[in-house]
Amino acid sequence: FKLGILPGVENATRASSDKSKVGGEVMYAHKFTKTLSVGLAARYTETDYESVDRLDKDTTYSAALTKKLPHKTFVGMSGQHKKRNSNVDGKDNDDTALLV
View 1: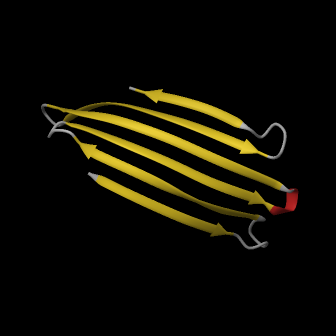
View 2: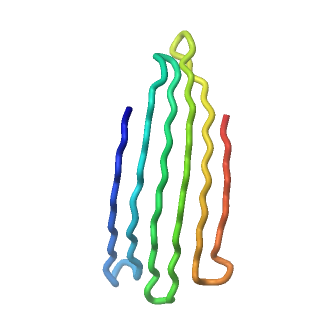
């Protein structure tokens, strides 16, 4: 069992960029057996583009299931859902991906 929390703040100077970012991530991993494990994560960030009066709120959820096979071979399935809510028209986004 593993649980991690990663808070973060990023602030750029006007010389390099005109945005600031704040957010965090929570992760969970669990090994059911010697050969089967699962991982879950959730991330949230707010990015403020000050010069253009834009605020993006990004949320990401992900999950992975991994099975160890003989001869150091692994198979897995993972999925991720990303969503962006922005106060600027046309900048919202909603994506889902599944990998096998």
